[in-house]
Image 1 (cartoon, rainbow, N blue to C red):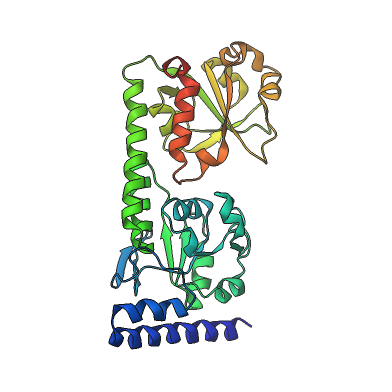
Image 2 (cartoon, rainbow, N blue to C red):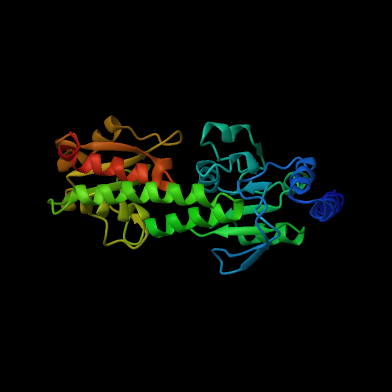
Length: 325
């Protein structure tokens, strides 16, 4: 079955290339018309020449031009594509891609954390599969063995990395202007938060990722984007002694005595403000005593896409509400 689908995608690519060659001899108008016959959504600068862009794995990826049929393998990728105006070029997306609402109308190719439906991906005839750090190496190898062009976007370690990812997606899709404008807007919002914080006194913050075990909840330490958000929002992460993600026992947390507790809120999170505040031993923490237990949408924080800026603004309001009254 995969062999037949692979032959089909190669035939379609050959047909599209032939149409482009014929159209070039008839002028730019005919080129646009011929490409429309392939039922591909046209990005802003479709007539741009060949592209060669370095992906997050350091590979030089070549395209004949801006991608017009894209399969996204990560929710953050999908959000970026729609945010820069390339949503109509997305023909397939992973099951977890649920934002914006229009993404739900795009065909699902399964979960990145499971077995990708490569037959479904081939049938969508993509000229680009946009992957991410969460995409398993064996999944990339499987798709590339079928002749699919894959491009991996690396997780950004800071906001500059986010802006660079947006610019890259803009180049890949022919939406360079929109991507640059969005990056500039996001940069201005981040700089506004930083300027608002100024030299204020920092508050001690505990960020909970998972409280399934309330005696040793999972948190986020140094080197994570959550840690960066806390710092830029005027906080001091009480778990900064942990590298990456890890657990902290309740005794140590009580000693750290955070002034604010923030946790990720989402459809699969059972924690609530009330349930967290009622945990045995947690009533001795300053944040619980002061009622400063605050949820933030986990998708804003955990997805390395444009809504990371929403997460920063929400974090700043949670830590320093007096600056936003």
